[in-house]
Structures are given as C-alpha cells and as structure tokens.
Amino acid sequence: MQSIAELCDDLATAYEAKGQAVSQNLKSGLSESEYAKAIGFDLQAIPPSVVNLYQWRNGCADEEAEALFLFRDNCFISADRGKEELNQIRTFYSADDEDRFDLNRVIPIAAFEGSVFAVVTGKHNFGPGFEYPVVSIFEGIDLFFSSIEAMVQTCITWVAHPDWDPYDALP
Image (cartoon, rainbow, N blue to C red):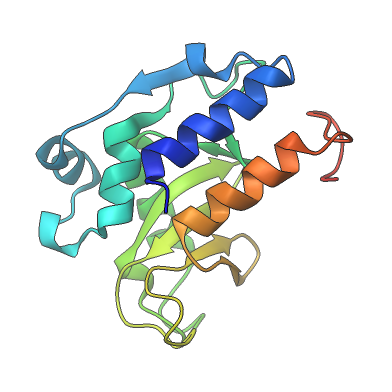
C-alpha cells in the first residue's frame, strides 16, 4: 500500500501531466508538532493520515492561483486555514445538526467557497470500515470518502481520465 506522500506525489504528477503546474503552488510540509500547534489539536487526537498529509505539504500557497492542488473540487488548505475553517464550522453548524459525529472533532483539509472536506477524528456511526472518514460540509454534511487514501486515489483516477478538464464537471 502506498503512503499518503506517495499518493499525493502521484496526484501532483497526474495534474502536471495535464498541464497544471500544481507543485509550484504547494507549501513545504510541517513537522508533527508544527501541525498540531497550527491546527490547535493535541497531537494524540490527530489521525496519522492527517499528520502524514501535512508532513508532505502544508496546502496551497495561493488558493486563487490558476493551478490548484484539488481534492475533487476543493483546494488543499494550509493548517492555519484549516483552523479558520473549523471555527466557521463551529459557528454555522451545531451538534444538533448531525448526530453521526461531533463537529468539534473534525479536521478541515480542503475548502472552496464555503464547502469543506474534513476528516472525522472522533466517534461516528459511519461503520467499522471508516476509521477516519472524509466528510463534505456544505449545506449539510455528507460522507464523501472512507479515508484520505481513498480520496486521493479517487482524485488520481479522475485527473488521469482522458476526459478530465480543469474547467468542467468531473469525468
């Protein structure tokens, strides 16, 4: 099984093969302690997959750039931006909105215009095959991927598809 860094490298390569210079727009990675401090979580509460993602890179440097490192249609965000998005989630959503998990125990990893992909870190009722699922938080909360690894693998498949276009719907 490939590591998060290897999968993300493969996704960056897929984007580059389509003429999207995403590598130039990625920030350097963070250490475990730098990431925990930036996101405001105790390191023991952060899933290893999230730590590995941010050790690889710390999101996009310019979220308005032409070539963005996207997970589906949300931009990979920095740890600092993740903390801001978490505060927004806490402001606009309440524990009463969903009974599937604690919204205070999610870690945002990608965002675009109010839509956020976040990793659920606490107890949830998505089932035993979803240790750290990725949910979409936008006009409701939906399960999108079983894990960060599944998300990145799906994105590689999309971007590598012959009909993929950065300005069109998913293939």
